[in-house]
Length: 510
Image (tube, rainbow, N blue to C red; front, side, top):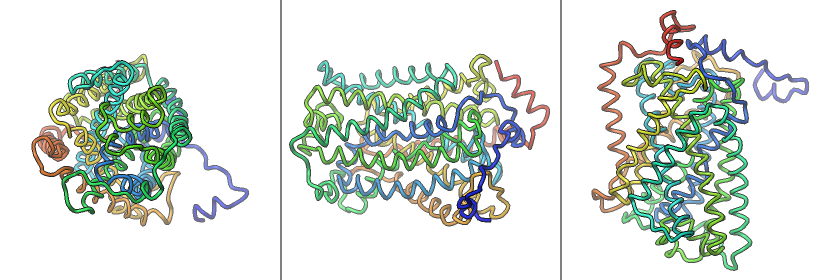
């Protein structure tokens, strides 16, 4: 009986829940993390990481010059559709392998150690780049708020200092345990949805003047220096693709989620389609409310959406909406630190990182991987350092996230397709749609990975070059070199693990 036929039966019963701790042991790991997150909390962490109030807002200025309104709106629709295919295909594999290692564990099981190794390094680069991008974006908006409220003039140095403070805040919050993370993420869902509704409502009803529908959906703007409009439109898709990333957080938190084999898969898919709808409403609301396009691009606040708020609502209304956005971005960054730290923990548990014995340690009090949290925020701080010297570095940091994490999504999907009938699906499966959706996902990821390695501005100079290519090259070289050092010790455990592996894991609860 097909999944569709089963779903149509009036007497159908929900499939029995798996014993997730037993399933984890079957996959080779001793449970050491606290399973205190429900299905809504698992969805909430991916929704919080996607965060339309972070990605859409922080890259809105980039989108204004890289194709303008037409590319931002239609690009969002198109990218969202393809990302939904990626999410569906990834959710199916997640259901079969619900572990904190997520993408790299899936690749290892389906393709072998080398596949798992490089997938893990790419995933880690993407997650750490995401922390840098999210928290630096929050710092930019905080600077704009301080400029509006107190006349503070943001500089690269002061913005970076705010960024470091935000990183420390997120590290501290993550040290209290997954229960607090789950509560904050649940609040984050309603804050994001309510925030989008408030922003779109205020921008729709308060201003006397609005742009026409023709402007919002057809106006093309090119400030990149490149002459080819197709190239410019392709580069402009970064706004949507960067925002639609991080939904693997549901998979990374699966060892802390009840009924993870189903809840984590559903969390991924639900986070994408809810964000797809909310993000379109937000982008349309912002673009209709633009009063002076050039003035918004050259805003003294350094943040174009802040200028839209000021022009449409005045300083008081703008201040209130900026606070809504900043709080949402703080929720987003906190969720991303949780996801990245679990990836560091899992990768170290399999001896893949330098100093793995330290990074895999878990606090006996909170059952949280404390050293992994500190490593995640420290590396994110280093990744954002070029912003002190380059005005275009933020676009490169966001591209680091895309070209790191997006290929890592596609690798386990491709390996699942290659495995054919050897792949044993979990309780959540696409059935007959698995192959067509999977191939659409793989082709899309290959396209955007190449696309976001390309230069975003012309002429290409030290200031305008896309540093994401360098970051990708450094990580691949580091991964290749470290492979020859750690290949004998690296490896996911055999089913149920052996006595030595289980003893080592137990010793790391401190």
